[in-house]
Image (tube, one colour):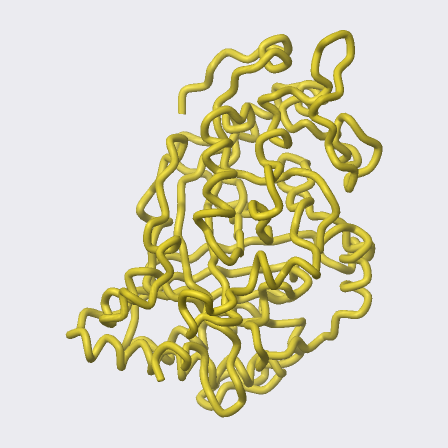
Length: 399
């Protein structure tokens, strides 16, 4: 992306590029207070069976692996049967691995313990519904997800029939679970892409505060409160009964220009974000959880610039909130570059069209921050409801 000239005056008065990250303000389910309580009480073993899949509202683990797969070419009826087989196999294996038990065909059973809060979460891309002859069962907001003007998408990080999200506080457990889950479906699906991510370990941050990205900024401040999850996160089955208890995931791969960001002093960084880097507080407040005052000004100049990230990422109405669960990545530099770092941004919501899309469109129009970050990957997945002990993930869809 070509960078425009940047000045303090230009930022204060207006103008901007675009962005794909998220911040905002307000109390959240992942605020320092609530996350601290979660971190202290979270068990070493996360439940697998239940109304909802684990790994979504679960207190975020230190490591994550996102794996996209494509079903092997097959006639429609066969594709549906293959999809059912994949989800059955994953359910059986994940139910054991997450509880510290080796999978039935595990060739390294010693690696199944301890669990380190391992979770396995599965999703279906819109293309899977089409291949299986179930296009009418896919929520419209998932199948019609747009491309934004600031996206610079690389097909290596886009799409996918299936998603595995594997998280734990120990990368060894994540890697082992991935190998088990992948090798058991080799005859049915092939890997499309994989993305790894990390966050501050709970042991290093017992307060459970908001994570920081590699630019040093707090990331994921604003999330729905626990009381809002039914209306903003979990599908209620109103238009697709099979999805009751499930949710929709937007997964974005965002690269960061760390070298360019280094050229800004602290005050300019704060103006770009609309937050103080040291404690995450909006420039109009004292604490990270303070509501930003976009009308506050000093000498007629807005305290929070109109093009600041917080001003545009902040929800305009309660229906624009969604659950942010981001992870950092730091991969080997690409040829001709000095770094290849950024964010694997996971956003969960009930309706992508009314929650994620309006926020992202505002960011794509005016956000100053996108001079230093670019979305290079984008995918959408439908996350089925949780499984019962006598069922499997996706049973409500596939029977």
